[in-house]
Image (cartoon, rainbow, N blue to C red; front, top):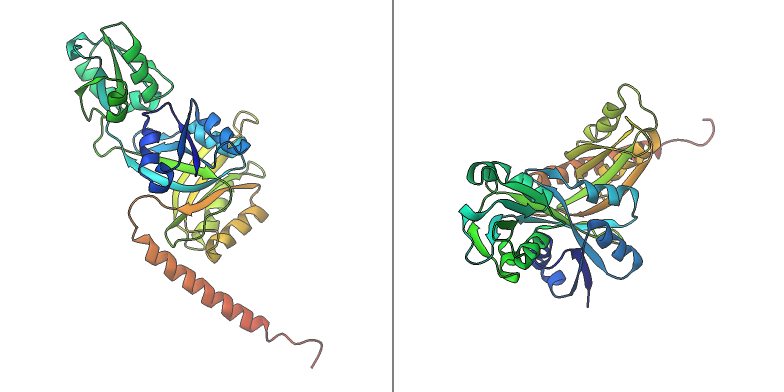
Length: 311
C-alpha cells in the first residue's frame, strides 16, 4: 500500500486534492506541517510520494514549493492535480459575522479573499497560519468568540466549525494546482507537461531571448515562465519554465539538449501528465512531432549518401 505524504494537518486543500485521486486516496495518508517536510519525507523513503501545492490562479506560484524542488531536492514531479477551490469563513457555533475581529488562515488564502474581508469585515485584522486547516484547528480550540478561519468545508467539518459565508474568494472559479512528487519519469501519455529550471551561464543582453528561441524554433508552446532568485547574489535569477510535451518527444528532447549545451545549467523537474481537461494543443503537438520525425528521417537519408573517400 502506498504511503503518501501531504501538506497538512488533516483537512487542508492538499488533502482534498489527494483524495480526488483514487490511487492516492487508497493509500496511507501522512500529514506534514510544511512543504519542505513533505518533500524531505519522500527523499528519505518514509513515503512513496508527496502532494504539495504549487500554483494558485489568483496568487500565482507557491514559492516554497518551487524553491525546494529547484534547490533542495532531486525528486521529480509525477503528475499535477487541478482542484477547484471554495474558500469559506468559519467560526465556532454561536459566533456571528458581526462578532468577528480577527481572521486566521494560510497567507495565500488570506490574499485570495482580501477584497471580501475588506468589504464584509472592515476593521478586522488578519493573521497567518501554517495552513487553512491549521487555522480551523486553532479557531476550534480557542476560547475567543471574535475569531474566524478561512478554510474549506472539509476542515470546518473536521474541527466542528460552522460556515458563516461561502465562496468568499475575490475571483470566481478559483483553482489551485497541486503536484505529486516522487522518483523517476512517468511514461508519456500524449497530454503531458515538462518543467525545468534554466540557470544562465552569464547575465548578458539577449540571454532570455536565446532560451525562448530554443522552444519557438521547434514550435514548443510554453505554459509558464517565471524568474526566481538563485540565492547566489542580488540580481542573479533563474527561470522556471513549463512547456507542453514530454521529454520522450523528440522536439522537447532536442530543445532541452540545446539549452543544456548553449545556455547554461538546466535542472529537469519532470515530465508528467497534465491535470484538467485535454487541451486543443494536443493535436498540434502531435502534428509537430510527426513533422519533426519526417524531417529527421530526411536528414538521415541525406547523410546516408555520404561516400567514404574520393570518387
